[in-house]
Image (cartoon, rainbow, N blue to C red; front, side):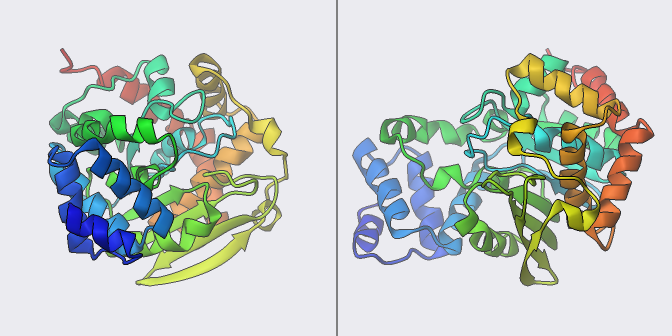
Length: 338
C-alpha cells in the first residue's frame, strides 16, 4: 500500500490496475486503519479519476459471491444517495414502473444512510425479503422481471472498510460507487448522483464498465433523482459516446412542483406513497415517478425519446402492471428463505 500512498501524496493518479490491487489490500485486511484512512483521504483530496473508480468497482465485484448474468437486457436505476433531500423512494418506485413496461430491473440498494428511508427499508416494510440467494434472485429476475439485491448480502467485503469510513466521517470514493457495484452484469443503467460536477465522470466509468447505454442524472436542486422543480442535468451514454443535455419537465409534458412537495418520511410513510403511485393516484409523487421511470425506459433503449418513455410509464401504472410486479415480488421473494 505504501507505494500507492506515495503516488497519491505526490498528486499522481493511480492506474486502473493499481487501484484494483490497492482495493484488494483494503478488503483483505492487509493494511492498517491509518493506511486505509490516508488512502481514502488522499484519493478524495486529489479527486478520483474514472480509472480509479473503475478499479475499485472491479475489486468489489470480484469479491462478491453473487455475480451472475441474466438472459436479455437488464437495467438498474439505483442512485448514489447523499442528497439529504428527504424525498420519498423515487428510484425504488420507478423500478417497478420500468419493470411493468417490460424491462428487466436488477434493483440494487441498501438501508438508509443519508435519508430517513432507504430502498431496503421501504421494501422490507412492504413484505419483500432481503435474504434471497443469488440463485433465487436470478429466478425472480427471469420470472418477474424485477428483483431486489440487498447490498450487504452481495458485497460482504465492504464490511472491511466500514469502520474507517465511519471514523473519517466525510464522503469518500465509496459514497460514489454504490450503483456501480450491482452484481448482475448490466448492459444498461440509469444512475442518479447528487454531485453535479461528477456526472461526466460517472458516464466515463459506466463506459469503462461496458454499459451499452446509460443515463446519469443530477436533478434540479442537486438531487440524485430527476425532479420537477426545474432543469435536470443529464449525461447520456450511447454508442460509446457521451452527450450532455438539460431537461425541464415542461419539455416532456409534465408540470412543475417544488422539491418540498415530494418529501417522504419513515418506511411506513414512504411505503404508503409508493403504493399510492402504483395504484394510480395523481399528483407530484406520480409525476416525479413518471419522469424517472420514463428516463429509465429511455436509458434501456426501449424507446427513442424520454417523452415516449413517460408514455410507457403511464401505461405501466394505469394497466396495473407495475403494481403486479411489486405484489409478485412480495409473495415470491420469501419462497426458499429460511
